[in-house]
Length: 80
Image 1: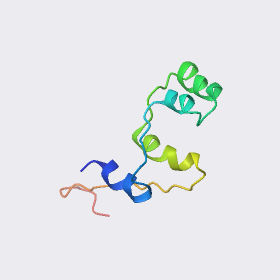
Image 2: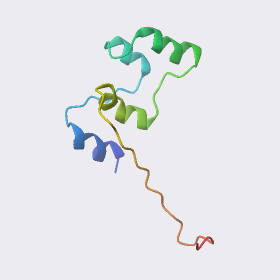
Image 3: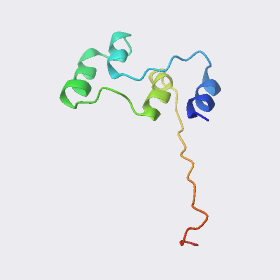
Image 4: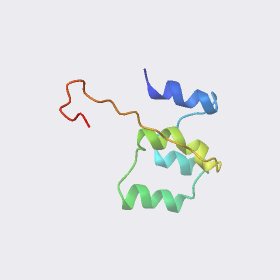
């Protein structure tokens, strides 16, 4: 199952997921100078999955909690 299927509908089923930093400037969410620094100076153009799934809520000022589910191998030699 795609994580977006679980996460996005919980907060707002109508959220449009933004994956490119430039889209934030184009939509007026973030000042273009900030996006220029991220894209041209730092060389980042595409958000990570966590950024893409949380940016809409964080720009609204909503606190966001992200949890990573870790799986242990059944045959793991670490039995602590």
